Image (cartoon, rainbow, N blue to C red; front, side, top):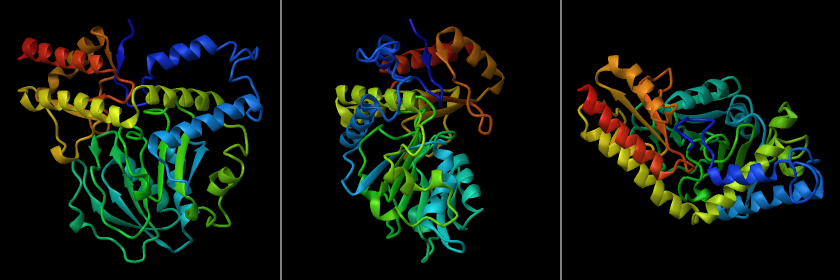
Amino acid sequence: MRAFNFSAGPAMLPEAVMQEAQAEFLDWQNTGMSVMEMSHRSPEFMSVAHEMEADLRELMAIPDDYKVLFTHGGASLQFAGIPFNLTQPGDTVDYCNTGVWSAKAIKEASRFVQVNEVAKAETTIPDFDQWQLSDNAKYLHICQNETITGVEFQSLPDTDKPIIADFSSTILSRPINVADYGLIYAGAQKNIGPAGLAIVIVREDLIGHARETTPTLMNWQTYDQFESMFNTPATFAWYLAGKVFKWLKAQGGLDAMATLNERKAQKLYTLIDRSGLYYNEVAPSVRSWMNVTFKLKDETLNQAFLTESREAGLLSLRGHKTYGGMRASIYNAMPEAGVDALVDFMQAFEQRHT
């Protein structure tokens, strides 16, 4: 039996997807070769690429006036790509700072543009009426879900500026209205597939405004014009992402995933809130469904918790080094049985050690 892997990313994949990939690994659809050996421009692989985009569009109900780009460099490359594509030197942009990934985006954007930090917090999201928005901002950037602390936007501010959102750790976990955003971007290695692929979903009127100095592979127009194949893409990551999209459709789509994901998260938060040993620092109204963070009131028990949980087949529960404590990342591929096993372990651990 496989262990339950609570890693924040690279994260576990659906077992059914990996079994399918295993069966096709040496010979994809009687071509005599693996999908990762074939030319990315071959008719066979182009069919994979076109089908994965169609499935993603269906899952997310992506409007026709939005482009879907499959890019390199993870979500972090877009920290620079966004200002390169949407601003000119001297422009102002708005960023909300809700944690480590927001701060990284701010630091990178500040190299190329004037950044106004509209609000800052770590374990909550300030009320929107407290945000100091700029009248002349080219866009507003948020990190939809902060993987490290477990803070997630449950609503959006009212603004006439394009909202740019890092969705790396929450994409495909529930339905969203894509049209509420000018651009959504996400690394693949949490809810989409293996590392090596990133996805940019961008309203088409925001393409074509890149600075003259924008590197070719950071210019969204390059990906749009060449079907994301200006150079060789991460073909195996594309292939596996496509299988994940098929798997999500078979589960009932994002409505079904939302029901399951909310239930998984609430099981953990209910245990934590009722516990005498565990606690969560995030404001309940903005707690993440995907990254449930918690700490032990007696920190001398941290190592015992990690050792005993690993022995129980519950892996990668150590929190990020910048925040500490524990973190259970419960993305789409984490079955409810994994959450139930973690809840049972946490209850038993508390009984043994308090």
